[in-house]
Image (cartoon, rainbow over all chains, first blue to last red; front, side):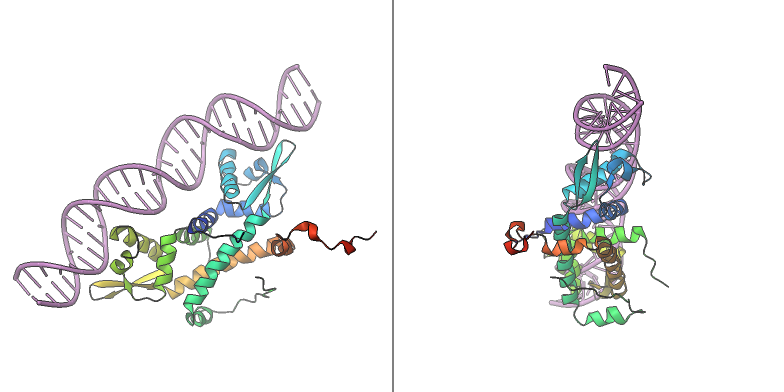
Amino acid sequence: MEAVITDERVDEVFAALADATRRDILSRAMDGDLGISELAELYPMSFAAVQKHVAVLERTGLVQKRPDGRRRVVSTDIEGLRDARVVLDHFEQLWRHRVGRMHELLDEGDLPHDNRPDQERYR
Amino acid sequence: MEAVITDERVDEVFAALADATRRDILSRAMDGDLGISELAELYPMSFAAVQKHVAVLERTGLVQKRPDGRRRVVSTDIEGLRDARVVLDHFEQLWRHRVGRMHELLDEGDLPHDNRPDQERYR
DNA sequence: CATACATACAACCATATGGTTGTATGTATG
DNA sequence: CATACATACAACCATATGGTTGTATGTATG
């Protein structure tokens, strides 16, 4: 069961992330305590529009809905997130690999160099 | 000159990458030696379609065209690429930051739960 | 110079996308 | 039970997207 990553899958993940509202919903879903109407209050659009954005994230597997009374609480989907990260990592791999020594250029370019602690290396 | 990253910019970068043909063109542009019609031969679509994809990458600043005789050679745009990488890195920052300790879950996640060593179950 | 090739771009088309309002249904709660 | 709230979903709309063919123009080359 090696998560086979098709082009369609990559398309889907990038497309899902290509909308600011959805990115915001996704980050809030990490706390996993808001229902759809609670989310909807945060954005200048109708409940139905937000509902659709959540549906896109759900279809893409980035988010789940769990029933809680009359609400559906939106939270990140661990499985899906890992998968999406694999997609982005994979892309970055190729990205960096093909760029090769172009990489130094990319890093030297404008500085100051980011002080990212580079916490842990995974997978 | 601090590359200000707007939501629109992030939208644009993700959207540009949400198409398999464009991702492929982008990676070939890293070699920087193909004209548009040469690229077009690689894909099952018309020259004009490929031309449009190149235009999207160019508008997003991921790719440049440099004249070479009657050809326009497509190559990656260093500036734009760095910017795009900042976008993706920034997103990953937020991503990883907010996920926090959920992180272990992401890496441990799919091991079968139930084979936890019995000896840990003491009372 | 005539011709072929590479590109640019307009016009068009079908479908996807991001939004809307309206209606139905499930769940709490006074 | 009546009402309010949360959600689901259909129908609709405007615009964006990804493709097509056709025409014009710039550049090499026999």
